Image (tube, rainbow, N blue to C red; front, side, top):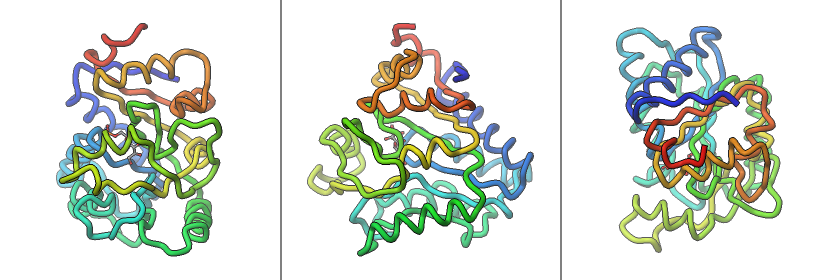
Length: 243
Ligand code: F6R
């Protein structure tokens, strides 16, 4: 795993955007795996500006989002569908028929998840997967557990994730209890992965990721199995680690 320590969050965002831009420059019809959450907001801002100045062209790019709450309506203000359009897709020249976001409403989630995996395969697989990490070490919504699922699946959110994500909702009771998420194999099958981690509370996740050990109790540690992962963090977060 390559470790890049940036000056601050702004620099993480620029660095992450330049990795995405480089992937698109190398392969204009590349397939991106994308996260939501607070961490990638700066990266998306940079990508929107770079698209406006013509530095990056999304016209042939295909995207697959990591996850979506379940159940949730597409147009709910807190859906990841709304997040992605607000932060990226409404502001860039992407062909929205190439955008894929897990459904938070499908009645037959098993069928939906199977078809999501099929769609990733048919698109040629993910070239660059961008990730954030939860304070509990989750990636996507693969929550710490004794065993993890390989492929896209519906899962229950942990109490910790519901508490952490309640900052976006009027009330904790409004946070969906479940999500549809890519599985660990879906993520590890990506040709390249970048993971953005910023915030003192996530320093233990970095320690675990650099420990040389893997555990399903901290799903981000499984990224050590992949041959092309870049962990992008900042000085303040790194200062709270044991490294
Ligand atoms: C979101 C996702 C999650 C987040 C994680 C960190 O699509 O997959 O794993 O990346 O919860 O969220 P933030 O960036 O809000 O701390």
